Length: 418
Image 1: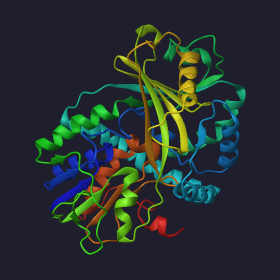
Image 2 (image 1 turned 45 degrees about the horizontal axis):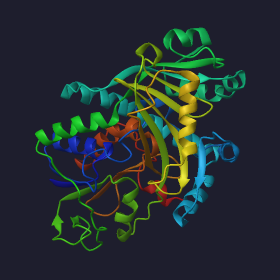
Image 3 (image 1 turned 90 degrees about the vertical axis):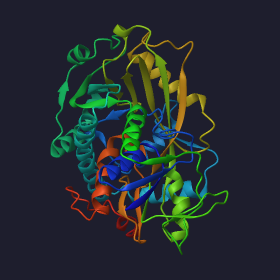
């Protein structure tokens, strides 16, 4: 089949490789000038299936309200809020019911564990070498935080995650550079999880896809799809339409605009995250792998010769405007745990990216209901952790094969129920 893929982030690139591996003629269209230039560019890089969860859950509304009032809160609203943002918030609140949360968490973690296995298989098959480290440590600043995470640990046990509750001394043996000046009540150690450079992996896999015959076209801003010819694509500036046997939409937040003329109203919203990447000043003062500050929801990752600090969730505002307060939270958490680890006077990369989020959490993967149009979108803050599995699922579905994983609740039908 001749298959077009819209989007060359981590979701689009992995989808292109899987389809090209299956022998399809693959053409990828990307509006930016290179692969992995948006959400995949400078994310935290953490692959931790047990911690892949919906943001919509019981008690989250209260947590969000408290966060809005906190100087270093993990969630912020920014002006202006669009009608899309307000609609997203309304649907998000409805998805906070316990039964809805548990169902969506199970769906996401099922896909996340499958995806991690697929990530390792692809890495081995292609002999890819990229920045990565094993292990993930969730830091708990107080006894209260240790108590609050217990419910989540029960879910980790149910999901089959490998983890240990450890005290502060053992946490510092795993990460010797952790500052002793910051209170640490304990930690959760997940030895099978990892941190890896998402963008680096995407660029390497793009080359592998090209070696299989896939074509990538950049700086291609596509026009919305046409109901009369849904598998024909043309440029927004005007061009001849190119017809395909199938189209897979992996265009992040922009997917909603492209699909709207087909009668598909996808409630995607950009939830912005931030990161700071800096060169390591002293390796002994830097993390060995990745840690997560449970209180501030900020991850600190070791990526080769750099440290990356990533976190925050902002709804509304603009991707081009970085709020200084969001960066100050990242710098604060870095200083709390690894003071002196990074060179912050020069060469610091500050980044803000839009996570393509659906209100209830899980992505939409599979047939759209429109003949020839397939979806692989809405992965939110878990795109890297879900990418390889999602891509393999789409390739199997297009081929008419059993995907090898329970796909209940991951299709377009879930959105139509609300």
